[in-house]
Amino acid sequence: MRTQCGYGDLSMMTRASAPSSAHTSTPFSRMVRTGNLSLHVLEWVPTQESNRKVVMLVHGLASNARLWDGAASALCAKGYRVFAVDQRGHGLSDKPSSGYDMATVVHDLATLIGTLQLDQPVVAGQSWGGNVVVELAHRNPEVVAGVCAVDGGLIQLADRFSDWESCAQILAPPLLAGTSASDFEQMIRRAYAGWPETAVRGTLANMEVLADGTIRPWLSRDRHMDVLRGLWEHRPLDIVPTLRKPVLFTPAASEEHRSFDNTRDYEQLASRHRHVRVELFAPAHHDLHAQFPERWADTLHRYVEEGFFV
Image 1: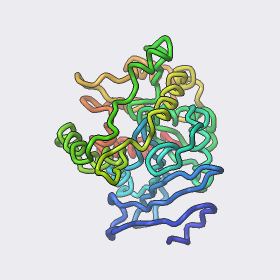
Image 2: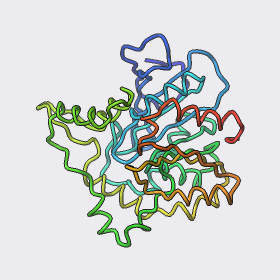
Image 3: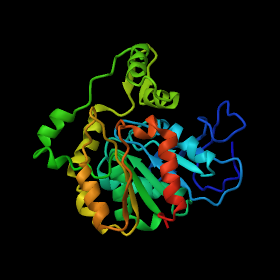
Image 4: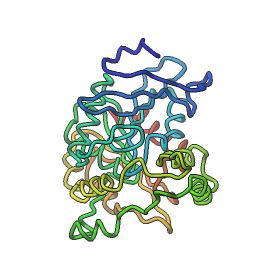
């Protein structure tokens, strides 16, 4: 148990089989109590003292904190203290029956930053998590230095689906519960051939492995649809122009991958607003932070070093 941190409401911290270097895939793991909710948090600590900004990483819908392992390790190697969180209903965090709307998940994140006593971290989120961090900068600008949205942040599902029912029908998650864990791993390894091992392991961590050797998503189907409804209701294109904190977008594009964001939206916002920057990853997968962890970490680091997040 690590007691020297000075945090007020934290449970036991663990670091199983941690090697001597802190910038590895074995961060400290803890449960953090935020009001009536316990959130699972990972922390990467650089081996030497650093005055760099803290970075908080937020996953996407039905994902988990471990998909940030590669990028977090790369940032830690540059001297950043890095946190990644399982959002409510995901991973090892609590799974209440309600509270999956955008306002509540943003409140979770703002409360977590306060509980950890972080001084205006740079907060990055992927996909739905990108929309979450944009909303965080809108509702709680005082808690962040700025935000980065990774192939997300401008997702407006209502622009593609005029009613919730059609959105729910088309974007409902696949029925993976009951699949054998070994079959699922083989499927992921085939799909992510050539990707870093951290990406494969992070994707596998989206699932709970049951005693009978089958899997089920940590995020239940009902809660998945609740999150999706909150995303369908979100209007980030109305929010971003009004932000008082900087926002960096790192969208992905390829012939195979079509983002729910429109590249023209990014370009127009960046051309009209000094607090907006865009770095396109092409070709790249939706999970570009896992596909190209070092490259993405280098991009964020460059913007920090240039003073964009002040």
